[in-house]
Image (cartoon, rainbow, N blue to C red; front, side):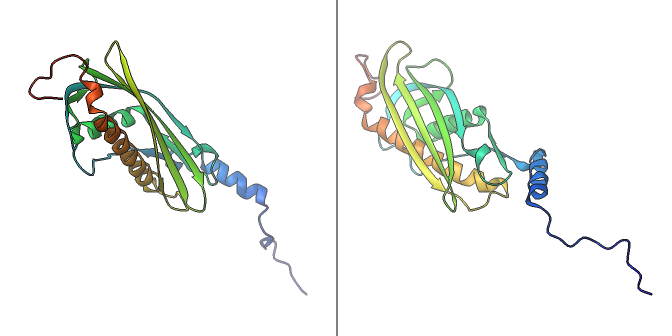
Length: 197
């Protein structure tokens, strides 16, 4: 007499619906969010200096694409980390005599947009907009955008962090190079202490 095993497993493929539901559930766990901290450093110091102090304030940091890309990993890049990264980079580059968030001779208002697209590997683009002037008078605005290519999967935090840091470093380098090229704009009619324009 043939007996059937009551505990025999169903070997049919798991429906795509259930697989998707499992992935959706996993995305709710904190471990599936990449919390980014970046530390861009100048590849070189300023070729020319502007002997003025600079106040840096940051506005919006927008992120486009991270929540809509294939996969379950979300991306979190806090505005305060962007602010600190920009301040540290500009200080280390040495374009200005001093850089802080306090009132100064010159003022820079900086905003950023990070966008992500999947083209095989992920491509991370950072666009910076900077308004330069004094506290009372605008002088010039700058727009720069640079990209970096990441990996084809985003399983670990470094998958997002490294290309974001590279793109931000390149964008800040372009921004500061443009400002240094326009050095003469930032002296105004005031005498320069300790040097000539």
